[in-house]
Length: 343
Image 1 (cartoon, rainbow, N blue to C red):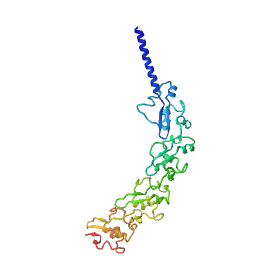
Image 2 (cartoon, helix red, strand yellow):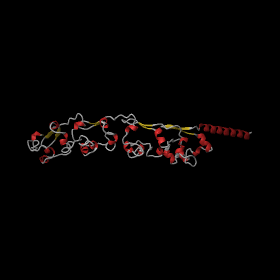
Image 3 (cartoon, rainbow, N blue to C red):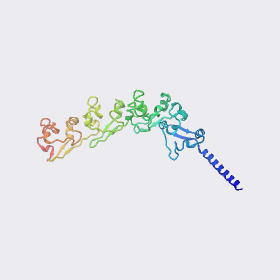
Image 4 (cartoon, rainbow, N blue to C red):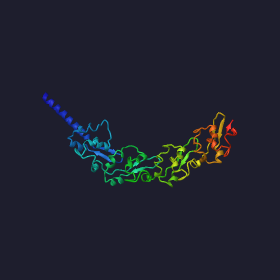
């Protein structure tokens, strides 16, 4: 009687375990891996469990830890991670075989939109590029320099990163210009205002300059694609940097000429210099009624008060104010001191 009862209990336990196994098997559904710009990749437990005699431990947790989900790139898989541990071309078809992509990826890849602040949306079309590459998806997706998942600047693209690996004016049109080919519906960027301390803002009009030049004539060899990324002084411009590359008095008016052309509403301040013999004053209004900005800046004075201090002895030798105040062009600095000093 006792042996028969033990047999019944053993049978019940076996049945429960069998039901549990069946229930567990029912939970092994197809797993969709969602992709941002393409249809999901569907992993079939049924196919893989059948191949490996229902041995879950082949993948879990050696390849996939359900407690710590992680996403893998195609580059990771080609290095043996995730699906690439088996899909090497030996155990199963290779993840590094362009002709096999459709076995996991169904449908067509969607356009990829990159949103840019102030420059319109840049759209990458798989529909255009895939036929041109004869379906060789790995041309881009196995190259970390192209699809490394990082934000890349236009300057980096010009050095061969991301889209610039092909768009280099040899394989395809260059990224250094032709902005409207990628940035659909792009309108000329707004006027860029450069804020200056102690002087009116300088205004740069894209609309005006694009009437004469192309984007690649300035970007990025002269300017990064971001206002204020690098600051230049007026002295730098006088040496041909920044705006001074064109505004040199030959290609365009000199950056050392009429300041009001770039600084609208400019009204230079009256300057005060503290000295041991009382404050000295310089009145821009009086001098601008007789001279142009370029007559003094920057060959005599830099665009910054106090950047090149000069003594009265220096001025008497023709430096600083003494260039003009020499008793010929204007009263001499060696004359009546109260004309400049509040004594």
